[in-house]
Length: 278
Image (cartoon, rainbow, N blue to C red; front, top):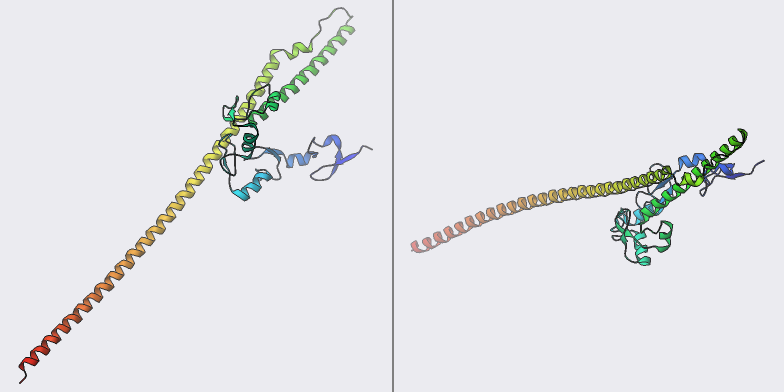
C-alpha cells in the first residue's frame, strides 16, 4: 500500500503526488486558500479567506501604525513608518541609494549584484525582478517542452524511416526548434504579459492612492463642516449672550437713571421746603 501524507491545512491524508510542492496542500485546500499577493506590500501569501487581502505582517502593521502610504521610492503602498517601505529602507541601508529601474523607469532599483546575475545583468527593482524571473522560468519551461516535443518527433521520424525501408532521412534537430521564430514569439508574448501584469499592478496601486486621497479629502471636508457648524453655533450663542447682557445693562441703566432722577427731585423738594418755612 502506498504511503499517505497529511495536507498541512486540513490534515487529511493523500498520496504524495496529490499534494502541492512547498506548501504541501491538497487540491481542495489549494482552491480554498490560493496563493495571492498582498494588497499593500505585494508579497505572496496563502489567503485564509476571500475578504483577507493583506498578509499577516501588513495586518499587524495596520493595527500598530494605521493605513500605509505609498513608498517614496517604489510607490508600493507599504510605508507604515515615514515615507519609505521597510523593503526599500533595508535595501538603502545595505546597497546605498536607488537607481532608475531599466524596466519600469522608477527610481527604486537597488544594485544587488548577486541578483543582477539572475536577470541577465539588468538593474531592476524588486517587482520587475520578480516579473523577469517569471518570464525566464516560463521561457525555460517552454524550451523544455519544445525540446521534448522535438525529441519525440525525431524518434517518430526515425521509427517511420526504419519501418518504411531505411535509407537516408533528414533529422529534425532540437536546436533548430529552440532557435526557431516561434520560441522568440513565446518569449516576447511572456514578456508582454508580464509587462501588462506589472502595469495593471501599478494602475491598481494608483487607484488605491486616489481612493485613499479621496477618502482623506472626504474626511477633511466632513471635519471642516463639523468645525464650521460648531464655530457658527458658538458665534450665535455668543451673539445671543451679548445681546442679553446688553439688554440687562440697558435696563439696569434705565432703572439707575430713574432712581437718580427721583433722588434729585426729592432733594429739590427738601430745599424748597426749608426756604419757605418760618
